[in-house]
Length: 203
Image 1 (tube, rainbow, N blue to C red):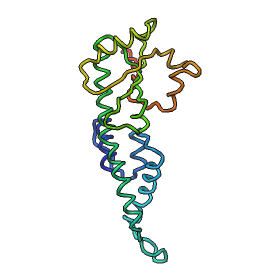
Image 2 (image 1 turned 60 degrees about the vertical axis):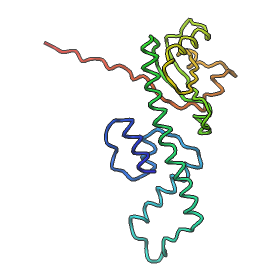
Image 3 (image 1 turned 180 degrees about the horizontal axis):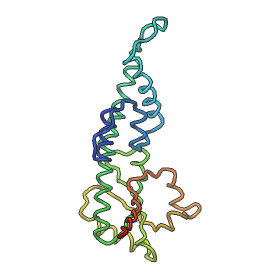
Image 4 (image 1 turned 135 degrees about the vertical axis):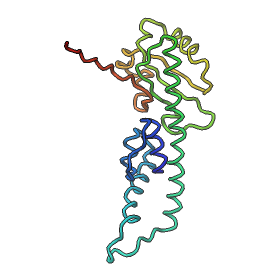
C-alpha cells in the first residue's frame, strides 16, 4: 500500500516520492478520500508500523497478531492497492479531457468526479461522470453545451459523461437542484492554476 500511494504521488508531481513510511501522511498528500472503513484500516496499519520497526517493552508481551486480523488486513490491503490504478487512470483522463476541451475553445476552470466512481461503488460497466465548470458556457443553453462538449471529446474512448455548467451555476447551485444533490460527493480532478503575474524589470 505504501508503494501504491507513492506511485500516485510520483505521477501527480512528476518527481520522486518523499522518503516517508507513514501511510496517513502519504494518503493526505495524494488528496485521495478512501471509504471510511478503508481509512480506519490505513490508520491501524500506520500504528502497527511501530512494532515492526522497534522492540516492544518486555512487560508488554509479544506482538502476537491474530490470524483473523491478518486475513482481514490482507483483504483491506488489496482494496487499498486497488485504488491506485483507478486513481491514476482518472488523473490521466482528466488531463486528456482538458487538452481536448481547450483545443476546441472551451476553457476548463475545474473538473469534478461524481456518481458511482466518486463514491467508490463503480463496477466494470459504470460510466465516468464528470462535472465540467467553464466560463465558456455563459449564455448557452444546456443542450448546446452538451453537444459542444460531446464533439470536443469525441476521440476519448472511455465512457465519460460530462455535465457542463458555468462558474455562476456552480457557485450558486439551485436549492433542491441537481448540482446541490451531488455537491457532497464531488471529488476534484482538475483545477485551473491562477496565473502568476510577471515581475516587472526596472532598468
